[in-house]
Length: 146
Image (cartoon, rainbow, N blue to C red; front, side, top):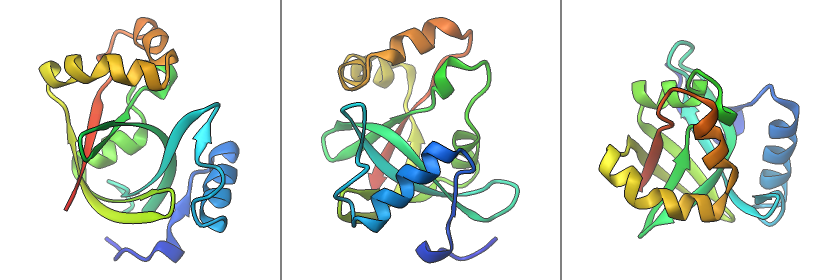
């Protein structure tokens, strides 16, 4: 396991994600902060196998002071790798616009997901189609400041 150093975080190998994450960072959170009008954050998480710190860009919603992210992977049959890593290592580092903070990731219960799901569809309507495309229940993760 490696200690957290934001300068040494590995950015996603997915080119558009890497490009957006770099723009987000290089602009100090003033550019690259949305995806087709939906707000985005940077999530730094520790890989469950490598122990390396990794970065991805995710659309988010809010629930009070907490941030909500959706492990949709576009409706794929399997969970995204970042979600599997959060289950193993729930302490994460988040950047929203110009603010950075440490958070704890927790998967919402079915009841809590049902309560926030309409809000998340307002933020990014394709989530509804993603859920229809897969048999797995798409998790919603709460990021709470620590």
